[in-house]
Amino acid sequence: MAPEVWVPPLEVRELRRMISYRNRLNKTGTMICNRLQSLLHRHNVILSKNALTDSAWWEEQPMSALEKIQIRQELAMLEELEKHKVEVDAELAPQSLGERWGKQAVRLLQLLGFDVVITMTVLAAMGDISHFERAKKLVGYAGLGAGVHDSGKEHHSKPIAKEGRKELRWALVEAAWRAVGSSPLWERRFQELARRRGEHKAIVAIARKLLVTIWYVLTREETDRHASQEDLAWKMLLWSWSMGDEARLGLTPKQFAKYSLMRLGVENDLTEFQRGKVLRRIAPKDEVLKRLSELGLTV
Image 1 (cartoon, rainbow, N blue to C red):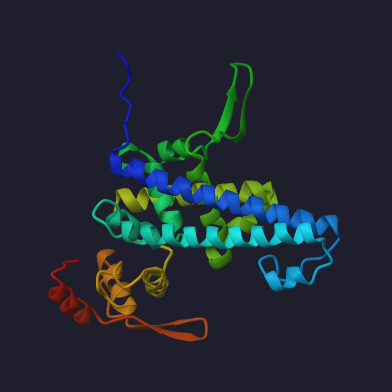
Image 2 (cartoon, rainbow, N blue to C red; image 1 turned 120 degrees about the horizontal axis):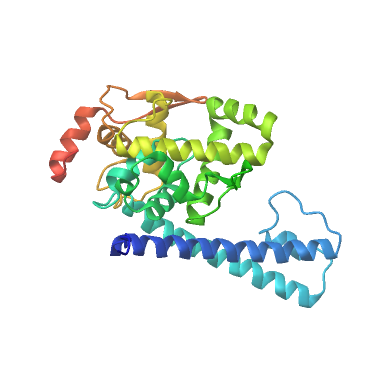
C-alpha cells in the first residue's frame, strides 16, 4: 500500500555530499567577502577593480590596527578556501570520467554553460535519468515548473514551485546565465522573454529549457543540435584543460578533446578550428586510436 521511494545508491550519496561541501565553501567565502565590503562601507572607501583580495591595497587603506588584523585574517581564510575548492574540483574532474558518471557527463559537458562543477551538480541531484519518464517530471523534480492555483472557481498560474533539490536549480540558473552570455541563440531567446516577463523570469525560463534539453540529451543519447562541430570541439578542449594529466587517462589535452568527441559519436576529421582570433587544434582520429590502443582503452 505504501508507494515506492527511490533510495540513491552509495555513489550518488557520496557525490551529493561532495557537491554540498563545495557549496558550503562557497557560502563561507561569500560571508567573508560581505564582511570585507562592510568595512569598506563603514569607512566610505570605494573598492578599486579586483582589489578585494589584494592585501597590498588593503594595507594602504586608513583603518585601525584591529581592523587590519581582521582584514589579514579574512584574506588568509579566503586563500585557504580557494585551495580547498581547487582540491574538490580536482576530484570532480576524474569523477566526470569514471564508469558511473562518464557517459552522462560527456553529454552534459557539450552543452553551452556547463562546466565540470555544474555537470556533476546536475548529475548528483538527478541520480538516474531513467527515473523520469518525461521531461515534465524532471522539471517538476527541480522545482522549475510553474505552480497552479485551481479552486474550482479560479484557475491561474503562480511562480515556480521551488520544490525539489535547490542545488539543481542553482546549477541550471548558473548555466543559463553562461549560455545567454556566450550563445547568440540563447541570448535572443532571453531578450525576447525579458521584454515580456522581466529578466528574472526570463532566466528561469531559459534554465527550464536547458533542463528539458538535458532530458532529451541523456535519454536519447543525442548531441546538442544547436552546436556546430567547432562548438563541440571547443567545449571538449576546455574540459581537457580543466584536468590534470592523470585524470585525462594518459592523453594530451588535444588527444582527450578528440577522444571525447568520439565518445559523443561525433566522427569527423576536424583537427583545426577558429575560436575568436586564435586557431585551436585537436588531435587527428588516427593518432587518438593509436594512443588508446597503447593504453588498452576503447572509445
